[in-house]
Length: 333
Image 1 (spheres, helix red, strand yellow):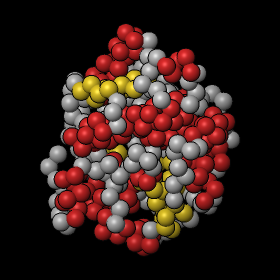
Image 2 (cartoon, rainbow, N blue to C red):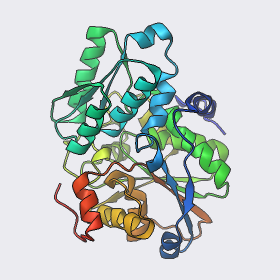
Image 3 (cartoon, rainbow, N blue to C red):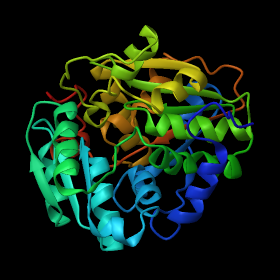
């Protein structure tokens, strides 16, 4: 059942699904025999890592850009990103012939910067945080009259990410727990809205790193807070949520059931497990759900079916090399 008091509802997610077809793809839900054995219950991986840009972010970008009328779209779009969202916006903008400018902080890994450069968008790198990149993006919007595509705090972006839950509901209707990477909250909020509309008793668990997990700290505090960014393997989960957060925070405060935080070794173990058992390359932020089950940080005893959102494949080349080499200790970040 939808919550009318929240800024995004199930109808918005359904509408987003109708718009993004042909841009985002329906991703496979793959059983993990090894992870099921470890967890003691049936576990499957939702492989958003096979999206055209290598992450779930293409859903939200497509959901937003397809709402723009031609005159507005001609003025271009601007966003700030830790890498994956910017890549998704640039990809969708190119498909729709919309000019795009992506603002990045100085801490975005070089592999993600290179991937953006290859898409031919305008790229501005500067500032020491995601918040600084968002400030640059907001200034460009004011200066140019362009449209901001916020990486998470936007109802259309959230609705696009929620389309993942519609596919899970169709492919595995007996799912009792969903593990979702947690950062600014666009993914977790969209999934929570859609999944709980389908099955109100489903458990939504947000998983993040111990290092400066801003949404987790904000939920504990009861209001948005700021934390300085710290280096982490889960770089796609870095960044603040904005003290003026109007959408993801209230949704997650109402609908998120649990939060699990992981250390760097555990995140690396999750990446290693995905590679060793499934030959999947997952970036750190995408492997946190697997890692939470491996470490026993989450109790899934009694669950009939657990789904882990494997949110992205855009690991840094040196991490991929370390995985292939069998390195057991996490690389320095």
